[in-house]
Length: 238
Image (tube, rainbow, N blue to C red; front, side, top):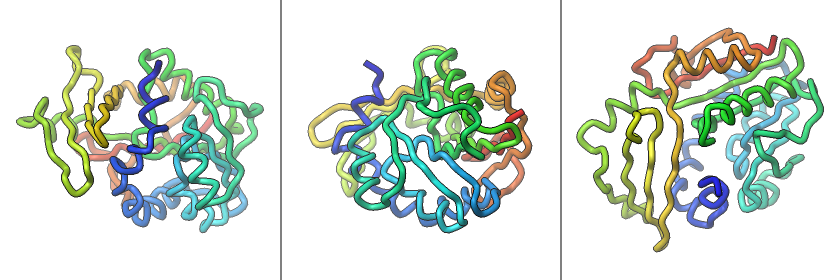
């Protein structure tokens, strides 16, 4: 079973990622600005999680629908931020072709699948449902920043007592994926995420049918730089 099917649908998810609720107040307006769409545009928030960024997209006059694999997250989304929602798998989106003006894919929500073919499939599905000329905003962790951040702590258990969990992270043997082990509420979790190079990101986007219109190095829209913590790509569907 894919790791994210269990890990993102477990009650401990909301403990491990409790800080994301506060982060949304900064991330939401910034990412909505970088998406740069006129009011009335249709946007698919994929994955939408529990909807933490939804209000900021709506505040710009966008028509937002969400999709996620986790029933637990979707239930919380419906309760807190009512919206059109659907449970889905990125590898086979349940939407007709060219049905949306944009796909909004916020922080580190690409690279979860075990094979490069599956990760490319996620982007080709995004391209399929976006109209020609539409937008994909793809927000990723910067690989070089992560490499630097893990020096000296890779493989070491770190305690987060206020948040209620502990974790350790390490690169897999070929250096292409990060494995993050966490223990929370007496249970173990392990995220296994591909961390691509900029060249790999751009090659996959091109293969899926996107042109990179802008690349940013942060939520403030600064120019892309390999050393930045976030790599944000605003792409146009060909």
